[in-house]
Amino acid sequence: MGTELQKHARLKSLHANETFLGGTLTIGASGAIAAQTGMRDGGVTFVQNGTGRYDGTVHRGYRRAMRGYAQLMGATAGTVPSAAKEAFLTGISANNLSGASGVLTFTIQCTAADSATATNPASGDIVTWELVVSDTP
Image (cartoon, rainbow, N blue to C red; front, top):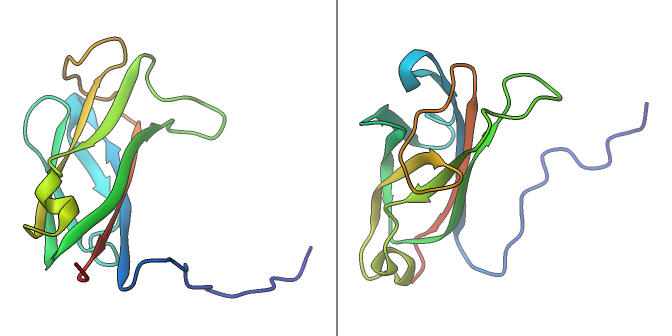
C-alpha cells in the first residue's frame, strides 16, 4: 500500500474565499429522501417538495454562487442510476452568480433524460451535489 503524501489538502482556487458545499441524497420509496449527507459539513438541508424536486436551505447565507452541479449515482458499485433520468441544479439565478443577491436556497430537479418532465429517482439511487459559494463579490 502506498504512502499518503498529503493529508486533508485544502482545495486551492483562483477566487478568494470560496467555500465548497456538497453532499448526497439517498432516495427511498416514492422519491422521498431516505438519508442525506452534507447537512453539518456542507451546511445545507434538503426536503422533497414535489416530483423529483429537492429544495435545499443553506444554513448560512453567502454573497454569491460560483458554480455547481447535481448528478445521479447508482445504489451499488458498478451499477448506473435508474435508466433515462438526470439531476440538475436549479434555482441559482444570474443575480446569485454576479453577487447582486445572496444565496440562501437552491433546488435539485430530477427529470427524464429525454425530456424536461419531472420524475422521481428510483429507491436506492443517490443524488450527489456540489455548490461553490463565496463571500467575495
